[in-house]
Image (cartoon, rainbow, N blue to C red; front, top):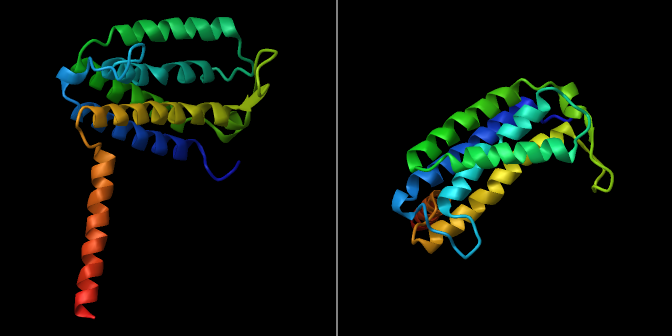
Length: 186
């Protein structure tokens, strides 16, 4: 198809989900009610949203439809909102992140190149009017990364340096130390 297949998507999604889980683990439960502004999701609500958001793409694409309709999508949104509301503790959210992420990634690995190439037609008036199944499934990872970025800002607001930032800082410090050592021995 294009060199990036369902197995690559699953591997990449697992990496994204592992980083989301690490973020969820590092935020203390007493801060799960924190919301950065009125009307925005709290830490817990954002994590619950992420935990439940891959269910619809798996459910929808499992039967390989080639059209999408608003009624079906809105019914899925209502199911997702109910599932999100049921996640009320840090432990439940972490369990849902782990289980749901692995369920989605395992299913994703099974999607054929032919299925990824399917063109899905959107309701009249939508732009673009079509997308490939590949693009739609890739958006599950993009959606999670969007919300994890929000969580990383919330971490900063709570005085937590996100683990990805700490990891990058450590790598940069190591490179600088190596460069200084090389300069000293030259």
